[in-house]
Length: 404
Ligand code: MLT
Image 1 (tube, rainbow, N blue to C red):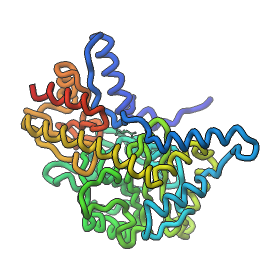
Image 2 (image 1 turned 60 degrees about the horizontal axis):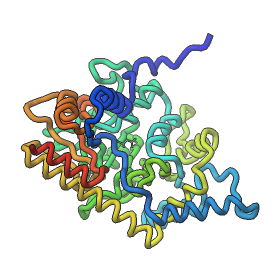
Image 3 (image 1 turned 180 degrees about the vertical axis):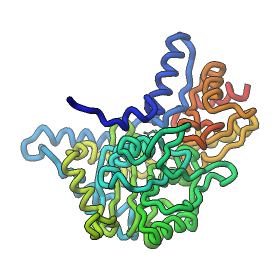
């Protein structure tokens, strides 16, 4: 008789964004004709840059001819894209093409990376955080039991108003730390010194940092680190995740990559230190058949001079939305962070309302969808997140409704 993975029973029934979609769809079907403005999930609304579409058409055309047709590609990505990534995203940081693993996005990679780690590792996760980190550790049996909204075996790094949303180093020794900067959901960033403290912690404690940099392209302020490899020693202890989803409108097209430096090692039970690059290569070549050639050509096109210009325009558009949202929320008296170096604005609910109560209020009274902060972790209670990936006229309308 087959038995299920019991860990799936322990996790909340639905993934956060699926639950929000369910609630909004139910409200919309009970209230037909209501004009709902969606500022919940961070899904882009502008079309793909022209350079990407042109590259896809050209690559698709190549598939008509025997000479240029492509079958299986390298699981870890074509050389042309891995080289472009190294030259453009990591120039002077000493990352090599065989340390880049092209994938279908940061959600998959941050979720799958747990495959290469033992179930016994002590895992620390910022609270609030992108739910994939917590849920996939729970699925993998590293989280313990879910009691009163928290997992017994995870170490939560509380990021709230009193800590200015900056995680403190854990008092106890942990093996794996998830950091996401610019942060989803709070939109906050770490300075180089703050990030260096984490790298030093990892070096001293032989911990691994899983650094999600999916939003690095949205950094507008000088001196905010774009990559953890800007910090000395990080190449010994950190894996970094990047994505074209938000940067270049690839949420539906799917492409991202993960950097696993060959010098990042973890312990084996036999006492040796094993390169995680080798393990991730083994995992990817076994379970993944690579991103389509057509999509990798589109990703490559973002690095051309014209591609850079078009991507910059997308980012400027969304960050202008972020400014508008941020200022509107401040104008109605809410306390907010984010929206300066990240496309998310994190707002404290008024009058001590719970996250879900304020979500319901905005949905039912203003017909606006946000994301309840508590969905990102217990420390997100009393907050909501607004995404700036919408159409600017719709965001202007949302702002009018909120201010009214
Ligand atoms: C979010 O809204 O946090 C993200 O868009 C979800 C995702 O990237 O999977």
